[in-house]
Picture (spheres, rainbow, N blue to C red):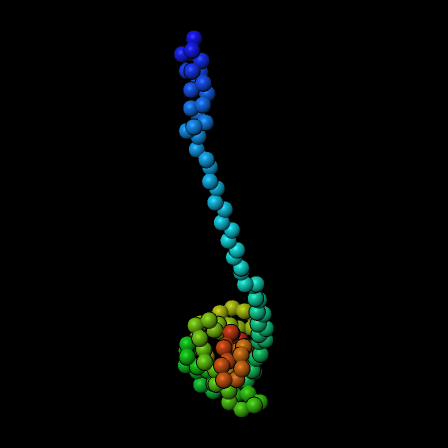
Length: 118
């Protein structure tokens, strides 16, 4: 009987003797983000009307207008269209009446489209 009681006591005490303690480490991190900055750019489209004096396809067009001859560099995005909006495949000729729509200041004009008025 003593043996049974001692065995029961050992059985009850053994889990307490071998119990593990839990250690919890909490690390707090703080991150800061920069607020978003939005920049709004306004561009206006201007046009010059006149007659073509010289034209190099895909490169330049010189238009004689009220202000005198004005040279425009044609980029890959520039479109040559008629007044109905259809693409003109024939090269521009000297003397044709055109309207050149562009954006940007005088030294950096970007041609958007050329409308042939003939």
